[in-house]
Length: 362
Image (cartoon, rainbow, N blue to C red; front, side, top):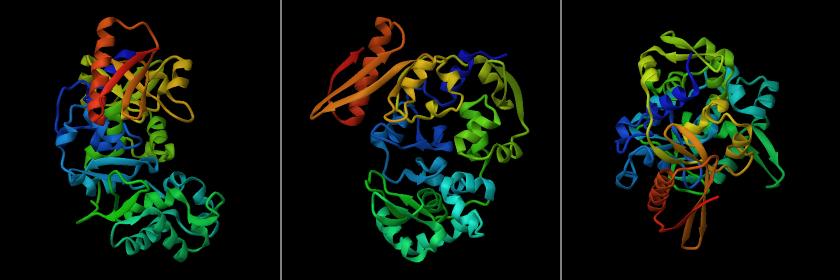
């Protein structure tokens, strides 16, 4: 039997949210990828794990469309392993990951993996120099047959379906230029996909290591993959534990860490931080009202993490040169905790290169 507090402490420790400093090479979340969505995205996630992002070289990280088609940061040196790790497990899995784009391809008798390979070949031929996404899409629409295309009413134009476009980019050896909007694609130098990923890049093992204990459905939901494919590839070196009456798996090597983890840290997590991406949301936030506040349909806030517990949400408030952090606590906060949150807000302001005007506690 494992209680909720043990699980939370284990994840804080596994994801290194309690460390004061660390290097990219030993930052564990980069093995599974750090989602880079919004101003407090990937690099803020590294900063709250002790990485000195201001000292990083522009070539240290690479930005790729991978899990769920979202942009994720990785170590540039790992790109070959990452490309192998994010491959769909099967044709059925690939069809699941591209959503409604699978239907016309199947109707035309085109295999989904074959379609991604075909699309990737054309994308690589087009992107011989840094190219804006819209231009790549326009040129693809001129050469791809009808099953790959859809009519976009807002644009009054015919485009590629979005998810095949994103998932084919890594297969084509293409990356996203950092800090570009609209996105700019470019070829990855010396791209060479590994035949198979090392264990630490394997997405199922990485999920268990960083977001465990978990079930195959948790992992499948995280990847947008069929549960059947995840179960087929489930690691053998796992132990079973019971969390809230549910049987889950944990890598056997992490059993001691689960039993002994004790997290002591205050952090302002970005809206798409890996810690908040776990698919057992009731473990992260037992209260339904608080869960609804943390994961709304639109406009997610960040989360306040204190000693292994999520205790509220936060939002940035920026107007001109004024930057504030608005905190919505879910419980009474001690003076010490408030001071720790203010310290983290100052850290966020420094990361954004703006002075902090105030921290407002609702």
